[in-house]
Image (cartoon, rainbow, N blue to C red; front, side, top):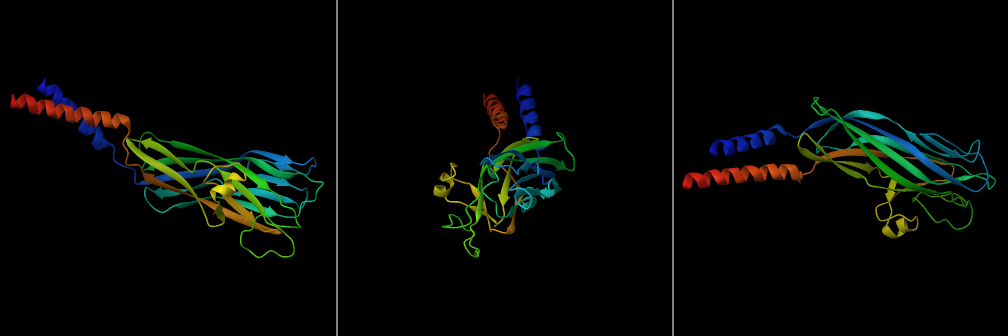
Length: 250
């Protein structure tokens, strides 16, 4: 009985020792438009995984740039640059359709460096978006703070979704989080509600007659909360040591 308890404790210690945290990851990040909807009856629209355009020749567009992006990232280190979203904002005449809503998917692949088993971590982030093609005269609903000329109004691209994903690798727990540069504005809860989104939505607010771009970034951190299986193993180990001590005392 004593030998079994010691063996269990040693096995548990071995499992714990082998689960060394990963310091460096090789990563790849890609972003795609997964769906899009347009309002009004006019034509002049086109779409693929990286480009949404409307308003015919010389119209407006939303484009995904720098996808895929590859590199290395440190656990707990600085965020690394990911893909970019660029909006070309031109005048859209009323006889053309305009973008109204859709979805954007960001896929992240991570590999421990140097290579460990298992080889891959694959994460997917889904963001729903709304787009408002504002009127080019009258009162302006949105502004990014830049001076507008005449009566031109800013358009607004708003998106919402989970920005963090937890995952386990070789017995350790991590969180991979997406962030956004200063061109993306974190809207208030009340402004998010105007687009039927909950708290935590972001917006790219763009000047008429200009191209505005905002970039995403990625960070990876350790999650100190152990997995239930790890807790069970540690508990069994402690129980084994306690039982061994009681037997010696007897």
